[in-house]
Length: 139
Ligand SMILES: [Zn+2]
Image 1 (cartoon, rainbow, N blue to C red):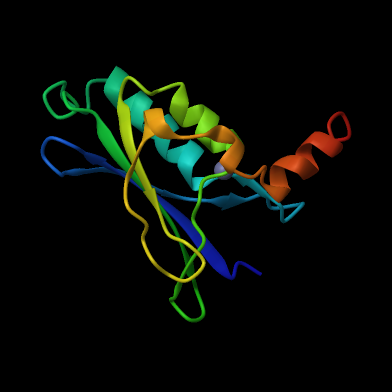
Image 2 (image 1 turned 180 degrees about the vertical axis):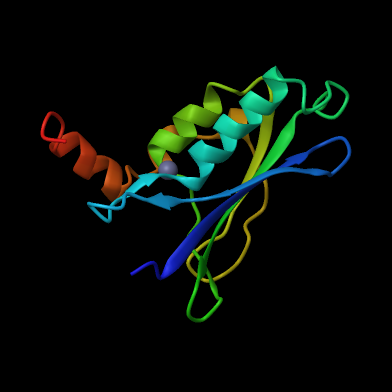
């Protein structure tokens, strides 16, 4: 079932330290992805900052997000471009999140992009999110 894993890692721009890594979570009953790696990682990051598990010094220059998808069969990289919803979640934290980078369909990690340069319309609505919208009130 779970042929691909979407992984999101967050690094300190200043020190390069890995702060958070999260994968996507499948909803057990619907098999639709209910929580994306990016939103889980950003959530964990903000929680860790609030509870002072990450020092101010470490995030003084902001953080860098790397989002990628790996096939559990072939171990090849796939399209890890964040969906529109995840992009919105990141943009709400744009005072901390400064750069983003993701893998494409050909297995390349693309150049980093400044979050402030992101055009949200270039990001797709995810199929799971569309499904949730359609089934609102029925869940
Ligand atoms: Zn997403």
